[in-house]
Image 1 (spheres, rainbow, N blue to C red):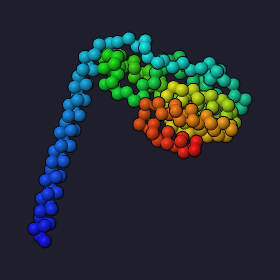
Image 2 (tube, rainbow, N blue to C red):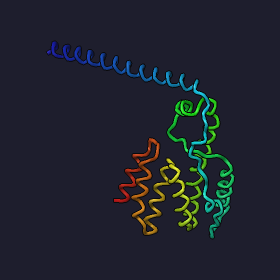
Image 3 (cartoon, rainbow, N blue to C red):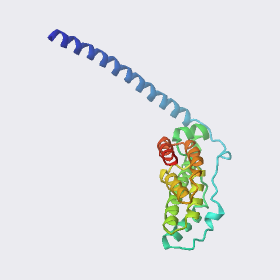
Image 4 (cartoon, rainbow, N blue to C red):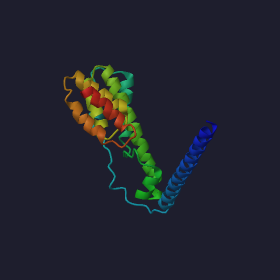
Length: 202
């Protein structure tokens, strides 16, 4: 009996040793690949940013006039107008290394600014939509969220609220298009969003 236990323990130890060694080699290879890419990225020359998908906030959102206004709602609209003066690009899902390899190290600061403006935009749009919904302005809330989704936002609440508003408006069939848009977003929460929307639609 003791011999069987010892043999089993030795076999387990050997398997564990080789598994750990293999995992270590894989991790070392990944780390080396990362530093190789980072080294190449740091020597990538500046490239034109003309081909980026710049986002323009629609005039109908900037000039909206809700019938039931509040100070918070007005403040959101003012912030949205202020943000419209900046260049906005959705770079969600791209690392700094990815961006340097694609557009050059010299552009990393401006690209980071573009992405920060985008983060501010989708956060603001979600807040604005919630305030509009609370004020009974569901048509404007839907328009706000549809624009957010069209930019590829990864704010899950935007998709869920829009799906709820579609149902309340008697247009649940629009959730099918919303699911298709969610499938194309570049984010780790994509599958979660798609799954929840699919459950709502079914």
